[in-house]
Length: 195
Image (cartoon, rainbow, N blue to C red; front, side):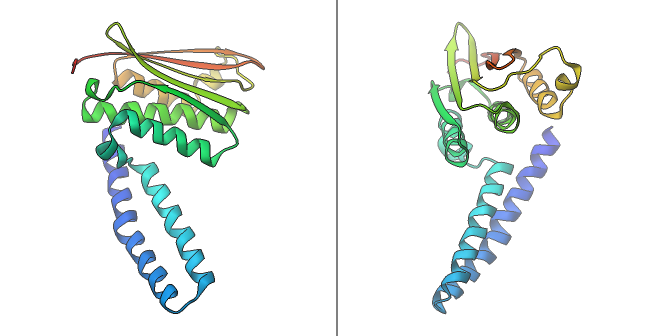
């Protein structure tokens, strides 16, 4: 996973620095020539490249910190989907190393992506709190739910990735799901370094 993250970072940088700069140049030239349709198309392509780049490596982690980056991630899902999101995110930045922060961010991202792709939910709640030496995260949806004991579902790539990341963070994951009621992802991660 570490080498995957390094490769993602490299690709994100290339997209941002190379493709992004070329699109910015095209956009400026089309603006100077007053070609509104080309300017609009280029601007849309530039936004798409930025979005892909952010997805590959969340540069906001360095700028905003972990808690605000997760809040921003949830806002992006809120804007890009029909789902209604609510959050209750305590500041947890000081409890994670840089690598652990990235893994925790990706873990939340993977849970949200699974919900968007599969849950057919209308509402999602994300709660991150510090409780007795643990960071407890609950991500709930009111979607179609699934049979947690179904081996096909357990071995899906999304769930495998979630389990892999929680293992890296030395935490625990429990999934509580009921058909036609929704799903709760409950992540408990021990705090290693109190800030």
